[in-house]
Length: 148
Image (cartoon, rainbow, N blue to C red; front, top):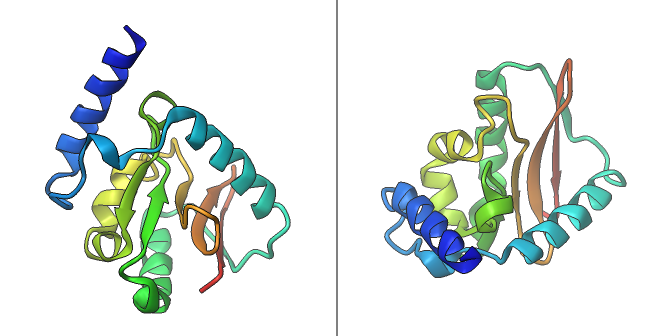
C-alpha cells in the first residue's frame, strides 16, 4: 500500500513538472530515506558554512539573489541536482538538470514551497559538492552558496 501511495505521489509531482522538463519521471526522485539522509547532512553542512548574503523576507529579493547566483552555474549546467520540496518526505526529493533549474527558476521556487513560506529553497549536488540554499528564518533569510 505504501509503495502505491509513493508511486501515485511521484506520478502526480512528475506531471506538475513536465512543463519544466519532459525528462522528469517517476524515476527522477530520490527515495524518501535518501532524501531524509541528504537533508540532515545538508543542514549539518550549512551550519558550518558562511552566509553568502543575508536577505530580507521579500520574495522578489530572494528571486533576484538567485538570478545573480545563476551566472556561476554555467560551468555545471549539464549536472544533475536535487531539489527539496514541500512533499519530499512523502515522495522523495526530485532530481533535475541545472539547465532546467536555470530556465524555470521562478516555477521551481513556487513548486518547492518557498513562495508560500513553507520551505527553504534548496538546490544541491547529490554529493553536496555544490549548492544553493535560501534558509528561512523568522525575520530574514540567509543565502548560502558553496562549491561554485
